[in-house]
Length: 570
Image (cartoon, rainbow, N blue to C red; front, top):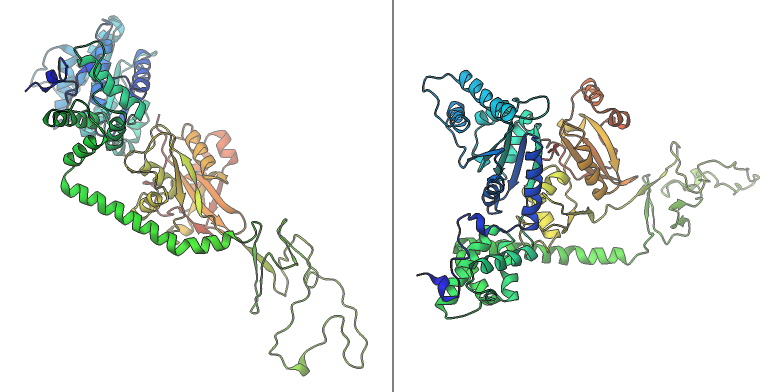
């Protein structure tokens, strides 16, 4: 049944085939397409587009081919499935693409490479043509074929690369890039394709209906609440949008309706999700809500009681067997400047025998004149200072850790798991659960929106003796998480070795964020050698440290290097 004719449509508007005529240039796709076009025209070499399943990578690569089809000086070749059994099989396909004929069966691998290079020289230099190789489903490519692509990038003149490569891949391709540093280092453009926002979702649906309509003005088949329900259900993924819209239109015909509302969209969405997945999702949401309620019941009264105190309150502890606690209400404590007013001498233990107790300062024993007691740090501590080395107890400040490490705004290419790895050094379950519980506005952890603000709670790590005495090369230390993230992204453009972030807190300095090399060194000599290899300005400001100050709370996993590292991508 051609259902679309019953809705005044001349063809199916929500076909799941990657038809370039239906390609909708959303703001995300337009940005990616413009970057690719510029890189290919400048002959910059390797370009990689990474996106989740259903973000429109295949449609985008076909639109790229369509864009260059009318230009005779640009030659494009498309590989839809790069899962070759061997590097030789891959080379033989490339030979066929560039020579328009198959290679001889007995041609050795070295000859294949030489013939491919000769063909690229003829096309790129003699014929002045740009040869573009587009690889879809790049996550399927083997490491042996990745090495072939790296060798092809060595075919170049003094001015440009002879072969332009564009790889469209899913998120798993990032693991290949991490394991093949010499290949990742050659990437000119690394673009993360994000899902669409609500505005582009609505425009895409209207665009497809307009192209398929038999009238100049297409029928409004979806109400505004229905469009919002489509966006919330699909999180802006084009493939999911098309599938849900198709099912909704079939339901409209079955129920003899002319428009789809919010309830119809929700009903179709529930039928599209397997029952087991629905129950799993409900259990997950229920567990998160229960955890949130428990946290509120347990910690909210304590938090409110603390907030009811003076905003400038602080607690000081006397380091002695007879410790006393001074609160902000004590007249000897200056709350505005966090200074300690002069204190009298600490009295001796009350358990001492009265007859053995010496006379107090300023008080004479019976029958003897009162001695004069000179001023000393023991009985007169200057305001704003703490005695460092005295035979009598000193006062040490004990501050409270903050409730949150900080907040980060979602930027293009960010995913929740990427941000969690950057902050905590790992994306293990307890880190992900803590972040999800602290951000109830994130409905789908797999699809966060641009400009969303993500809060990061405290996750304390136990000390790992294996890493306690290792040497760290510190590039920068900042006081806020947002500033540390910005500097980390900037540094990744100049530092080719992987970087990572250490988040910690000390009673003296509060929250601190160290930007360091991801590798931790066993010897000081190795750390100094790595520091010397840094760019000049960074090497001057960098320092080497080992261990942590006393009383430190560590919020980043000290033993996780690779999973939490931040590597240069571009």
